[in-house]
Structures are given as C-alpha cells and as structure tokens.
Image (cartoon, rainbow over all chains, first blue to last red):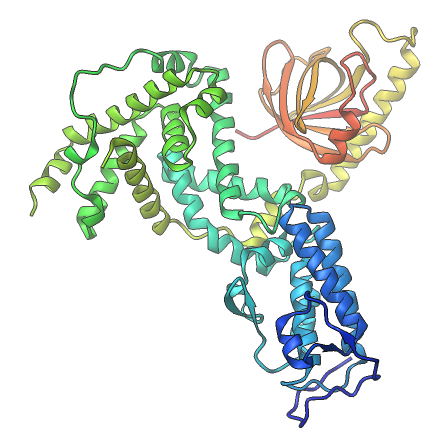
Length: 344
Length: 180
C-alpha cells in the first residue's frame, strides 16, 4: 500500500462513506477539530478507546495490558488507513497515520511506526506531554517510546543508542561517586545497562527510567560490597569500625567553613576542587560512600538505611556524621583548597 | 545553609561534573552482544554439556537403589567446567529459598573434583527440556560449597516457589570457571 501526499482541495477522504458516529471524549483533539464531532469511521473511534485504555493501563503500571491495548488501537487505525484514499495535509486520514504511528510507538512496534512515517513526506509533528515532537527525529522521542522500543524481545538498536546516550552521563556521574574511581565507574555503569537489558521485559515505559537505571547501578554496587565483605576483602572490621563513636568536639561540621563556594568556581579552580573532593571520597570506606549517596542523593532516611544494614537509625546517623567529618578533615588539610580560599 | 543540604549539594555538584566528563556511552550493538547468554553464543558447547547432564541423570536414576528421598534430598546432576578439564558429578542442595522473585541457594558438589573453581558462574538447565534457564555468579565457600543469589525470571520463580530442599530439583547445574 502506498499513500501519496499531495495538495487536494476539500481534504475529504475518498473512502467508503459510513454513517457519522458521534465522537467520544477519547478522540484526539486534532481529529475532533477536523471532523467537527462527526466521527466518520467507527474503527477510528474504537482506536481512540483502545488508546485510552492503553494509556490508563500504562499509568497503572500494567504494561502487558497497555501494549495489548495500543496494538488493538493500531490494528483499527491500519484498517482505516488502508481504506482511505490519497493523504492530504489537511485530511483526517493523515491524522489517522499520525495517530497510528503514535500507537505503534506506544506499543513498542518501532518498525511499524517507521513504515507509517515513511508513507508521508510532510512534517509529522505530534504533541507529547506538551512538547511538539517530530516523529522522524528519534533523538526527540520521549523516554516512554524509547523504553517501549527497547523492552521487546528484539530491542530496537537505534532506540537503545539514543536511550544510552541520553542517560549515560548522569549514570556515570552517580557511579563515580559510588566507586570513587573513573574506570570502576565506567564498568559499573556498563554492568547496570547490561542488567537492565537482561531484564528488559520488566521495564515500564511509563516509569522513571533514569531513576530506575541509577537504582540498578546502586544495587549492583551494594551487591559487590556485600560479596567483598563476606569474602573478607573489605573485612567485617570495617563495618565494626564504622560503629565506633564519632567524636563531637564542638568543631563546626559545616563544609562552608572549609570549602569555597563551589557553585561560583569555574575552569581550573573548579577542576581542582573536583579532584580534591574525589580524593576525599576515595578515602572513605566504600560503605560510608554508599550511605552518603543514599542519604544525600537518594533522600533515604537514616531509618531506611539502617533497615538495609541491620543497624539502628542512631548508628546510621553516626556513620553519616563520620563520613561528613572525614570529608571535612581531608578538605581542610588540603593545600589545594587552602589556595582556592586565598585566591580572590 | 545547614550541613545536610551542603553535603548533598556538594555531592550533586561532584556527580554533575563527573557526568559532564563521562566517557562515551557503550553502543547498542555492543551492549546487546554482551548480554547474549553464553548458551546462545556457543550453542554447540551448551548442547554437549546439556547432553552430559542428561546422561548423568539417567545413570543416577538407574543407580538409585532406594527411590525414596533420603533426608538430604535428591542429588542434582552437575558438570564442573574448568579451563583444562570437565568433571561430571552431582550436587547436594543445602539451602533453597525464594523470596520476592530472588533465589538464595547453597549447594555442595559431591564428590568435589580435586580443584574447584573459586571464581565461577552457575547455569541452571531445565531438567525436563534441557533448556538453559538462567546464569548467575557463585561465591565459593569451602570444601565444594557454593552460594548463589539471583533474580529469577518470573515464570521460573512461579514454578519453583514451592520447592523444598528435600524435593527433586527441576534443574541441573553447569558450574563454569570465570576468567579473573
């Protein structure tokens, strides 16, 4: 089937005329504007209903039903498109193609969406969460379509490339804080991606993908810590030594006294501070880094962290004080930081 | 500015700077190749090992004089693969628990070969269909004992959730040495 786009007057579709059916609320706004509330095709309306069901299932985290519903919508729309005449830029059959391409993307049927997109040679721009997205520009696709494309048995490679490019830097940054080592951070980030892909059928396109990816990396790091503790590499003594009381000698515990305003630093000065903070983090026990990340980057409470480690809230609070203190002590003693302070 | 906010802000600043300096991301093709399970990359090799396990199962079945399980349960056919050698043996399941879709398993290779790999991974092979189910790293404990903690595919978790240590296990094991 090929559909030619060309300017035609009227914009009417040379399809089998059906009795008009009143549009339901689920018809896309663009279609309602075109047909004025008289849905020309019962299949179109059924497609709208299926798409609504798909969206609701996705909101509820029910991906199996979401995909099924979007595919049902797509099937209805393909029947409409195949019965339509030449596409026009103002015709509602073009809206059907756009709607079908969207349903295909929502269902993770990327090849089908590309086939539909290739039918047209006019811009194909659709609103997605308030942002206008050109369907041909895969870099502009929202995460929901990319994740849907990747979770299938045969993941779409182009979608995976875009998803990896988009979320790799933040993932790497988190891994660098956890491992305090650039090479280990790259390995951890890559392993996190592999784990996500091995269990890709569990991915939820409607979920928060970057947060999920970071959680997987953090859990992998914790698995490594546990395994090394059991093997005695890090040693139980490390965990025990963390429980020792943190001295409270009245000294200020705020970093602002020690570190220049990092948000105002640029260029070489910012790079120097980054190196010193990296060194301070690398000197912490890995478990302390994990606890600081959990508390300050993930917003977990001391009680939640304590439950994970089988310790009390007070103990975890002590660990955090220790971690902050160790960072503070190192940075205070650093001649590089001292120089940054004295530089106007 | 209180201490909590400061540390969080410094860590976020540090993470953001590290993100800007991140190396290039891995390519999709490389990631997909990396996650291909070994039995798909080397199907012939897997077939050989699966056939060995099936043969072990038959021999064990014929040799068992008492069909009733003893208190230690049934032995699981196991192949231990090292760089230069393969040993066909069995494993005794010491601990088996599934919680939240996660398997915790301890098993002991019996008799243990002279040299057991300390850095290894175990592949679970469906006893009925001879298909690979999953692979997971193992921690070697002592005297031929291994410990595994692994996320199970949903269907496998559902099928195995009621298994007890004394039951006949629906899987065979391939323990393979992993390069350091």
